[in-house]
Length: 292
Image (cartoon, rainbow, N blue to C red; front, side):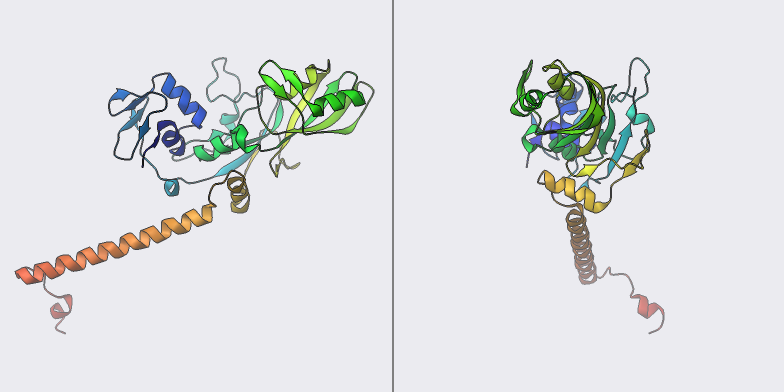
């Protein structure tokens, strides 16, 4: 069955689907020797190259799914290679023997807190896609007057340059006067969206930290610049959230396929031995060699 090239590349761990769409648009991907076009489809019999390197086709069962949470520090950027030589979040992640870490969304340089990384590009894409409406929660310190009407406006929705936006919840979390903390939640992740929503009410964000993604919360014990790998049940929670099979089931399927292949190989060998005996070319039985 054919699939879109960007999906194949993402599943092979080359980046998120959005990153692979950009790579195709930039002419970095070829299909059977020709520059690939966005939207083209391929099968496992086709040759796909990214930056001149052949990409091995992988089925969903072939892709290891690991997920990390990371506590982003102030001043770090979310690009893999920064032209200004600033610290990037990828500098602190564990090195992989194969594949690469794909970031599930981004946080701007002045935002701290929870980032999620995975080796499964398809999982990353689904978690980021607006249609899945995965809820994010942020701790926000604001500078400016916040009235009941302000909070009502933020919940009902405001107009940004790139479309309407709103917070699902706005909860007061402490502070006094014009410097107060709030916890806000929303179900998408547009560029600087939290800051821009507040700015429509003439309120400036002075501190911003993401503390939750779905039901995955940032542990208080995880230091800035620190990471932790999620357990299987937590990974499966994220997969279920975006309608993907749990990894235990995928492992079981893979194990069953290996058993089937092993049995098939034994049957083929038995048939081959039978054919050789009929031709008189069968090897001597080991038991006869021992005099049994």
